[in-house]
Length: 476
Image (cartoon, rainbow, N blue to C red; front, side, top):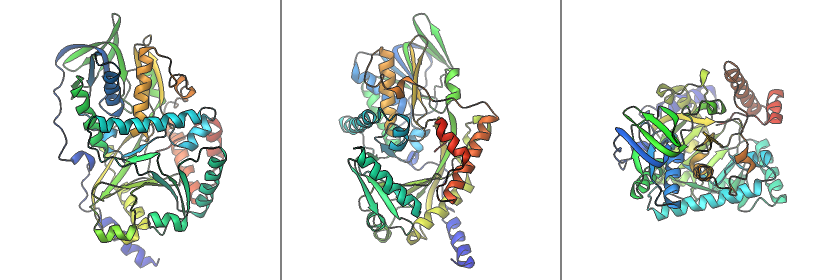
């Protein structure tokens, strides 16, 4: 492209953001329910769930479905679904391990069981959505991992061959350049790997609100605008203090994820990574025809600094990812949710992928924190003689896996030995992150190395190869 054309293109990309509201598209839905009242005074229960995102909502709902007589209370510091559960991309994946490559590398002896449990978990999510009448635009369309470089196309072909040889390729189809562009037309696509059954698309905030409604209907007492401040033993159970009261419970499930755990020893296992996304205006019929996408799959590219993108129910395109921003000290602050320099970068990438959509405007631009751990997938544990359980570290693939994590927490609190609790993935934890300034320095060096690998045919430098050998990583 000539320099003058590039300049004009960049100006158009920036102009596409001129009316974008710096708020999550999903949370502006007119169907958003009113918040429940805050807790004032003292309450008691069998099970206290801390956190009103997916982890906590599934824990509360599944606890009542396991035992309708169990008295359950859920505390949410702000409003149900306001954080990661209401501002993600809406990809609900069967994978419990942040993708099959990560799972196969870390738990090769358990991968078939993990894949089986993941498929069952996604089936159960779909069944729960139907059973409770949750209207969340659920579409089980699958996902295509696309190659935008020649070396990535070869890697996808080799990976599909390896999966086939190991008997793990059921429902996964390799697409060459012509085949992938037949599904979704972009001049940048050189190949794809289509997981036809392992991923669903949904409206993430509507899922959270629907789970809240289902919990209330089953008798869960939900208190919003009620942050949990402290967790202490109280007689044979536990007590959690809140701004205007306290809850005493026999058992406690912690689903706070990226927010500081009430268990101080858990905090070093996660760091916050900020991820950002754009949402377009609804595409016209002509625009839809120009890109194809008739099967409405979720898409993600194969770079280390990757994008994820999908269609909404009203044919908007959500385009997110690439930048993964970690702030020194692991701070989580509201001002980090907005990052114009990343929005401009994402807009340029969007129109490079879909030049036929030039002129389309973005209506929303937002960000939020992801709870990343060093193995990229959730970890679990108990405290206070088994009276407290926790799950965290989903690393951006928690829309589906949080339901599995909720079941693990309930198994642990009930003292049950199940096929879930016997997993090495559940029994062992990842390595914690080092204290500052080492964490920030290591993450910055890893980010630089990943960008360098993307620019040099995927070749990983000594730092990345060392991290691979140690089983460490940093990802969005």
